[in-house]
Length: 181
Image (cartoon, rainbow, N blue to C red; front, side):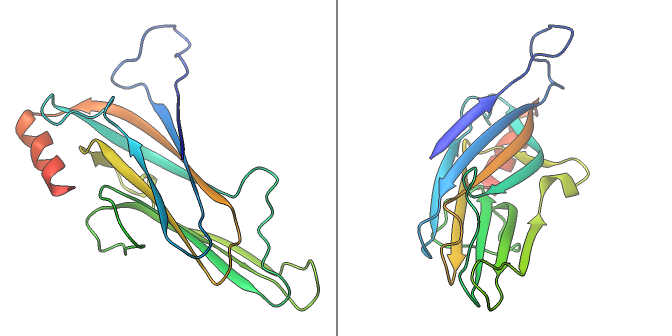
């Protein structure tokens, strides 16, 4: 699993202020049609006792490696699904699971001739950008999980999160952390 951070200094050249956003990127490899997940360490940003939490404003998803073309074969269909959660999971969970931050899927189907793709649909079921204030995270690790149905149509899933760090009262940050574990 790769995790990288990207921070671009503001035009004014000042240091990172409370309102400056930064990006966290993580990739998890698919494992055929078996659930696979990787943890994303947020310990540098989140400290519930120290009153700092992470706000995720946006999540963008990329399916497959660069130049990887999702393919399912003649008359085939496949689905790759991802989830970003505050708790480790052993399988995909639904939107009703309190640990779910974001989830979505890529569906690919082909027609009756070789090398024909007749449908490609990407769905972002739950995304922090859909909420008024994004999604607050008070745990020190979050988890990117993937699973595929029917076929192994892509080799990896990458997520890019736009985030800021904020402060809360110790009681509020601890309560949030406990609710996300």
